[in-house]
View 1 (cartoon, one colour):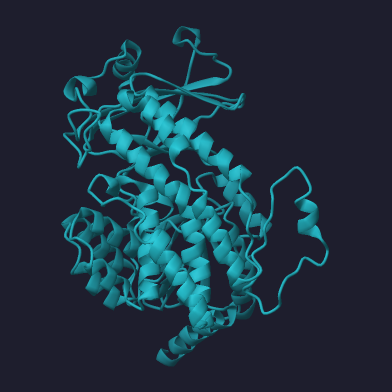
View 2 (cartoon, rainbow, N blue to C red):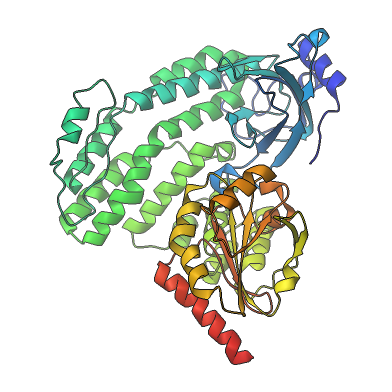
Length: 542
């Protein structure tokens, strides 16, 4: 674990005097000359200085700060970004803080060359998620967890306060919106026989509007579209506009324009539209097509290299392109070909491929067609390396991890056997379900097979948490070899193979070559059959 406790005097000088090296280097925020101009890109690199305090009991001793330059990884994990594991320091009265409760931390990122988003967290809590930072920012942050407060100071404070206000407004609006559960996917028409929804809607709580047929789903979507209102968000951004500069103003406007629309578009494109296509009702499908063409397809202003940094913008644009592909019965690569060949398209392609190959790295044709469209050589190399490491037939290199007794275990010890490796972490609900419906069944069926072994790898950072989860039996079968990946998600093996989506599995043959990897999109029966076939092939060789 890296400890970033250096540069404290330097960082303190920057933030407490209200000036920074970055501000001297970048007098105007990069990208435009005035607050009224529209930024089209980013400027020169500059440092970012961060000073923080965390007040809690017991004290928070370790935190992680992640800085994401481009929104290309699932769960906002960007392999082109930076991750800093930081050990906080005890404070004293002369530091201006309370020794019993308060801890301090600081970080200097010496050379940032573009806007990015920052998340601060530890093993159990996300303190601040996806806040925009720019080259030249100097920011002070105080997390008072005992009183549930976050406050900002320093030259970049207005930008962070603006984001805090936007965040509060967004979630306040979500609290007031009706919940619209989907019920028309089943054969039976659900009609609330017990009167649960009617009772809920008379209480002082969330209003529930069940979607019991496709027509009500379309009506719900149209009503949500009619309620889209950017003015409250733009009013907040405009109050801080002159203090933030044009790049932050443009990016935050884009971010919340997309964020306020995302859930509506996601629900329509991910659920309603595929169901209409599957049903084959031409009239219903035409209604969905009209809604998409009239209300969604052209939602955004022209894409540019700056908006490629907006996480919500990229997520929503990707969803719309997938819907366009479904409606036109086209491949996603054909939709990409119709776009301008620029950095924005590269971001979309890279994000799609990273998520695709994290779950199913077997589509070589998609890879080949996509690489022809990627102009950025860095992304081209990133995708190629990721595919080469996880594709069928790739030999997994040996790794050494720690078992329950604290002893080193090498993967090489299992050469000659079919090996199923399962990656998980404590708190992962999907991991519990995979163990219950897939892994435990495989464990009971194949535990006596000498040519097969299961390995359970936890991405937990805390050993005690991991041990409790192993003993509980909720996350992994009892007969597996239980290992912990030191460093959690920052473990070298997990990072090298892009394993940041859980549960993740690898099925290896007797030579350590990949039979299948990713998130297994199969039924329990198909999963058991795949293992059985692999063991049979091993016996045939022997």
